[in-house]
Image (cartoon, rainbow, N blue to C red; front, top):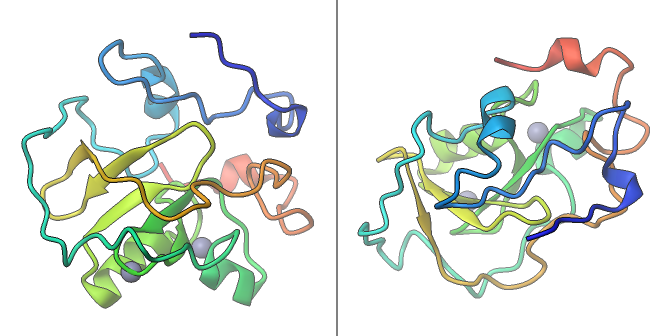
Length: 165
Ligand SMILES: [Zn+2]
Ligand SMILES: [Zn+2]
């Protein structure tokens, strides 16, 4: 499947990191190795996992277009994750502030899904497994004209040096 990306996703001479994580073919695995961002180290998928309805609420809309805490603090992020329980949008573990994982620790909400274009995986912090989740309430990604990293105006020039391993 050919993927085309809006010009806005090409950042600092880098093709967008948000290569679609194409399960089965391993497509996108390279991007994940470079920017694992909260994804499990293995590519195994726990497709048999069941999840309590308490963990995922498909009716809840995302909290906004960017990481809640970063927007409040004037910080920036690399990739965005959406809490499948309450809609909280937080930044990934490669981002400096790791607010998605902090949200899990603060609230106990155990499941996130990507809030990046072209990605639809779910991840359970308790098991470390990715799985196919239900279709949540739209929107399923941040606006396409929002830069990666983002948000516009908050990303320092040396952002690549500030990422977490
Ligand atoms: Zn954040
Ligand atoms: Zn939550």
